[in-house]
Length: 266
Image (tube, rainbow, N blue to C red; front, side):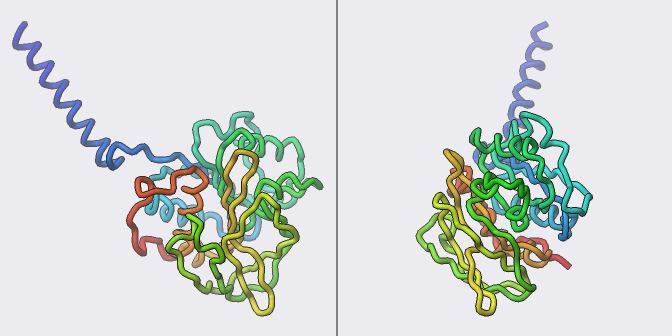
């Protein structure tokens, strides 16, 4: 009986040690990764590729576990079944909206999306998310922090970080994209703080900003139409920092020391 008990105790101790090592290997210092939900799909973009570029690029830069919900519906009326659930955002620390669904105008559907963020779930809005959910109200625009109605031709955009003292932009350098879409600014909400301007020929608009949606932090950028841009390390650095800022986790614990780890888009 004594021998069996000692072996049982030995096995239990060994299991605890192995388990502890596994935690340390997957979560440095026992840090629990943030849980992010990425919604991707809709019109006009290669979301099937971009969802992978974003997941890989963000997880390489932050202690983050990204769950992807993707729809292959390539229309402006694409919907996500998950949004029909009252508690659709439960269990996630941040939501990444990367959808393009301008003709989804069902107000209760949109209100259910916004309720999660009104309830305190941080958000990141990418590119065409700014052109979604045109219900006839300004509810969605107040959430993202800026109203945009369209864009010009695809041309390189000169990006200039205008608020260098903000945590999101710290250490980021100005850069020029490949041919991209520059979204117009109809109105920048008074709750938003512009971080970067984009210039294309004689036009210049805000292209990255943070917003305070009630008590909820929101980061948004209109850059990111083409795969090459979404896979660009400079773009992924910006989005990663914006995401962590939205969660109030932009610090050395959650940032990973990464250099040029983005998967190149072909």
